[in-house]
Amino acid sequence: MAVNEILAALADENRRKILQKLKEGKINSGDLANALSMTPQALSYHLSKLKKADLIYETKYKNFIYYELNLSVLDETIMWINKLRGGQK
Image (cartoon, rainbow, N blue to C red; front, top):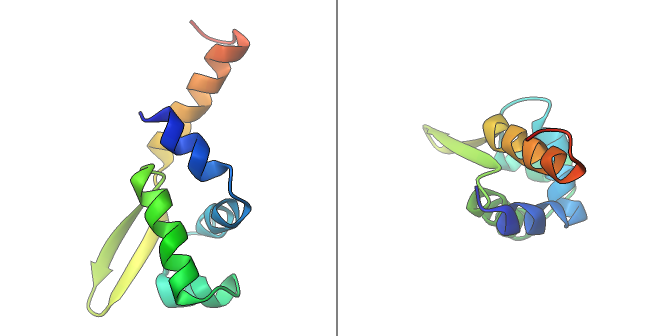
C-alpha cells in the first residue's frame, strides 16, 4: 500500500466527490463527468490520480470505460489509520 499516494489522492475535494459517487456503484466516465459537472479532461486527471493510488479500478466494455471503488485498498487504509490511533497492533 502506497500510503503517500492514497493520502494525496484523498486530500483533493474533487477526488473525494468521485469516490462518493462511485460508492453508489459502477459508472462510466461520461455519466460520471455529467453527474459531477466536470469536464472530461478534469475528470480524466482526477481518475488518473485515483488509479495511481489504487483507490479505483476500471473495466472496459465495448466503447465504454467503467469505474468502481477498490474497497480492499480503502479497508487497508482504514486499518493503517486505526493503527496510528492505537486501535490495532
